[in-house]
Image: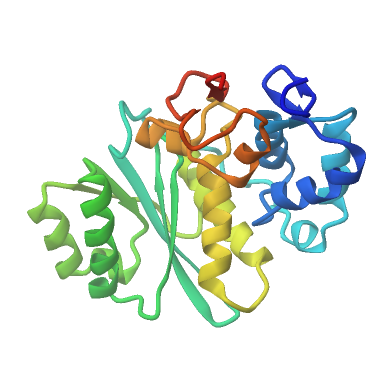
Length: 260
């Protein structure tokens, strides 16, 4: 017991009357069963929590309506990246409710970017990439399908001028293109769950969860693998020892708080 909160290891034990609210926080952006459980295990605990989460997602209509079909094509695995932002994959998603999105995923960290695209020209894609490269630096390789935007002379020249290798993958066959494209498909599924409305707010909500949720394969979040630190989120503030001064975001496994 610390600060009036019962702890199970480093996780806060959630009383019955607060579990619905915590489930709502965990389910923001419709992350699906696996990622919702992974996020919950980083912060909270209560008896039969995994079962409750499975039932919660099972009752969510958008989640059930957008469940993916199993891949038909054999999976082609790309060479494992040696570090963050070394190889990125891009693809278009939509239109959903009249909106088209550009999806960018880092193959190493699985960090996603989803950008609303009023235009899908080569010029528009370059404008988005220019901003991402200013934030994260240049990748060594960019993977896309052979859509007209990506094979345009302007786009190829832009990548070549930056020394970025452009690798083409077969369109409409995401299952054959390796692990990173599974995350492209995940982003598309998530977009299909979002209702029409303020698209940017919904995308931001989904990405905030995606960036902070540990990957089941690595046990670390995309933010940890790409940026070397954890991201603060509302769930951090459940911990009785949390303050702005004692939050420790370095990647050392479990979240850590200094004793006050």
